[in-house]
Length: 77
Image 1: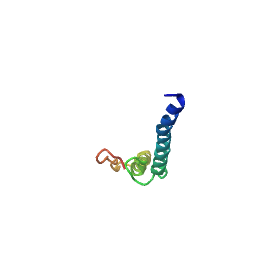
Image 2: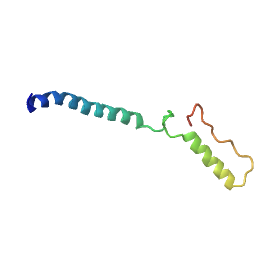
Image 3: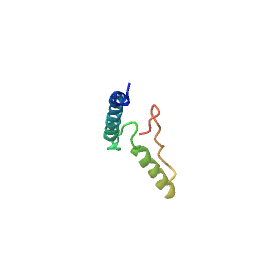
Image 4: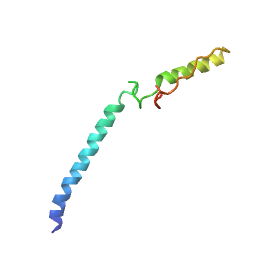
């Protein structure tokens, strides 16, 4: 087999690999374009707000502080 025939057969998997990379980039981009949806991999806004609230109340000297948000099934919301 000559180099030209190898190039023909090699072009098919290389083109498929490049196409797969672009499709995966599109899927990841769609998934991460809104980080505040409340999904498992998004920013845990409720937890962040509660931590800020607890810290501010501690600085004000309050004694009755709210409980921190606990994770559910390993996911912090």
